[in-house]
Length: 294
Picture (cartoon, rainbow, N blue to C red):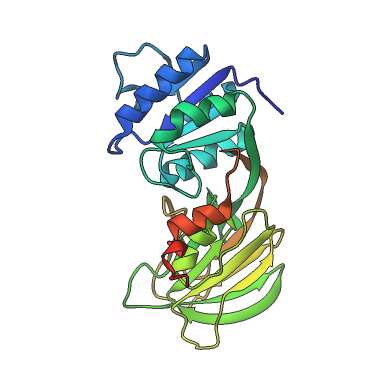
């Protein structure tokens, strides 16, 4: 098991509450373990008194042996879309609340981070989605997603009409508020609130969840992770539906466009402390433990 995490990058969202205290503690800990640190430029503004090498997310991904994301799951989602292509392992340190991706809490930094540096961790691989907007046979927009790609009407007053194809095989024509295309990683996020199933992160599958479909029989569909998913936005639509990746990256389609979603070749490598359990995260995050036990 790899223990040579000599050069470590620190990234995160600089506007999060309580981030400075966690960041300072983490820097002091890593320096005490004689690790070379690279601090994302925007994080460096929070600790100007600490002299560290600064760099962009791409520079950190290319030059680091390990990247530690400080913040919540949203911070990790934002970083993951860039870091995956460098195949640099990622460790998530949460600023306060337990997350599905950032599972080391501030109280556990002093024990769990040194353990990871010593090679005591669980390695997990997650795939990402590649979303393209195709117009007249040409790609006019492109973005990545670790959680989900959402095609929606952009307004609560109108539906969009589209045709769904999987591997060029016609599935159905649908009128709905939109469609959520989710990885197993994203199955506990927006997809879950739309009625989608919880999927174990190791599954090689994608779930398609219609958003308020105009058909009572329309239900989520789980397909193979290698599938090519295509939504043809019908010409009769009057709106330009937005396409959102992880709730953070936006593109816009026009009537007549196609939205094509496939698995990306690069995968994100997540590290977890020994003893990490997806089911334990579900119990805590989804409050399964609130059920009465006789």
